Length: 190
Image (cartoon, rainbow, N blue to C red):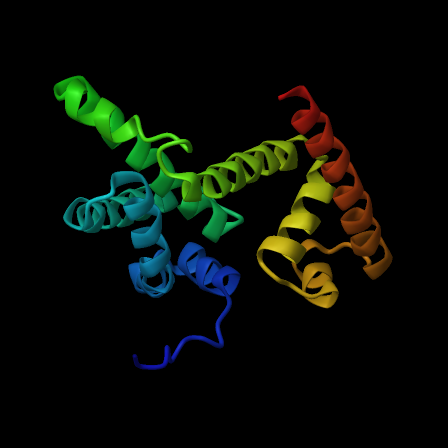
């Protein structure tokens, strides 16, 4: 596998270059980075390599269209959600056409395949964490996302957000604590 000549450019820098120039070249570099991630997401839901490859292409087209209309701050998590939603819609459409076939595929339970239970639980927890992240205030959500999901340093976060170093540390610390509280509350409810 060849080395990405643009690996030194962050996702945010590529997005900013795209938004300032509207040149799809920057999106192409960005989308190419996440081809394998998207294929993995699509395979997870569709369980069919050809369908998954088709979906990756459709997600690319949707991403290009949407990014021309809307400004996205956290590209990787946004792209993941676009792919996941696209696959779920595809499964729903398929279910309408061939309900018996899909119901059989979806009827696999953790009892049928005990190795599946931890994956299902992890998916459930990740979805809950994403929902809880949306409940944080804007500053905490932004700093927590940049630090934990985009692996940015404190200094990078101060440059991106304009917050002071002390504010960034505070938003991350308080955001992490609030996220934990919200997540524990949800886990106790379910």
